Image 1 (cartoon, rainbow, N blue to C red):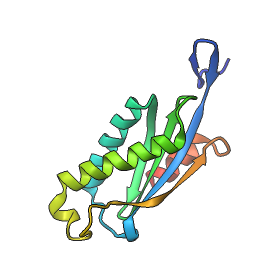
Image 2: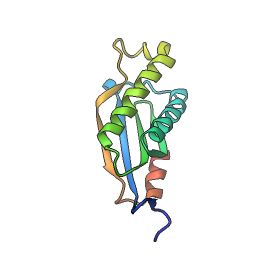
Image 3: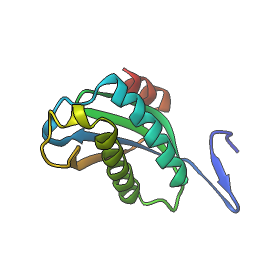
Length: 131
């Protein structure tokens, strides 16, 4: 059995998702300090959702996450938690900066992208997200 698989009771699995989340109106609001804090927030949320943040990166208007999820985790619910909690915390912790861009209590756009990471080798995805 390959060592890169997760196992639990009577099954083994490896489910990796590449998630892209974009700021509302594609505003260039994410700073390096916010990006660092987001990685901490996303890692904590993933652990609470039986998932693991493998890689994280982003630019001023979007972020990429590579997440290893547990088989019973619904991707839509995971993304909802990631967006909701991170938006609330980032808007609270960086209010002075965020309020320059948004007058409503928003941060992320309503849309997101989830791609199964089974086709491309993970090292290529990691490199893509890092750069």
